[in-house]
Image (cartoon, rainbow, N blue to C red):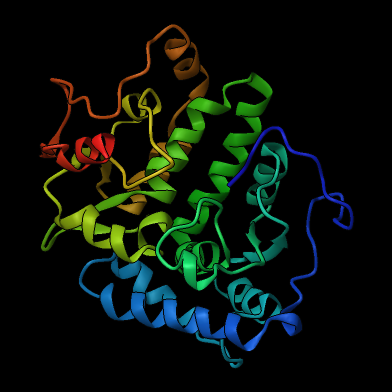
Length: 288
């Protein structure tokens, strides 16, 4: 994800890309990828959107362990015209949006340590690649990600990135999708790359699960330090793409300019409520 105020490290290109350095990964780092991959791949079937499972095969490459971005990009390009590029970590908003708008997904090239198995603050290669790339093999979601990048470039020019960042957070990172025949499924990268949140987001009584509403979502705060208190549920990837492409965001930004933020745990009378959460987990963590 992006960050507005950071300086470009030495050795990076103008677009903040760096060599992945696949040959420099250690056996322990490859083993960490394999451990995380196996754990999530066994747990996700039946919980994750079928489109994610369909795309997961794009990560099963010829080399063991951490994917080689060159080989991965070749497969993605054939599927949807996307590629994966390595960056040193968080990158500026304008660079992030430019990569998405041009169908390039920017991924960190480092992987977590055993001590960070279940939580780390800055996204690593497992979050970025396992979490995001399978859905980039889906044509509809791939188009949504590009549309978001184009929208981000416009938002940056209008000084309203914070509003749009909430759309990314509550869809790309922590979204749920409605399955008409089988309840709710996860698809957000922050969920599918986390063993704990893959369980929490669907099973725990604590969080709210609310219907997707663009204006409401863009007013809603979120948390970056723990499991989410709200999850927003889209009807389908097709509907998400349609709303993104057919909505004129300019009037929405103007409309929301004077509107107060909605506190995370709030449920509005106008919300479509799938689950009215107890918020017990968040309260317990606040007391700890």
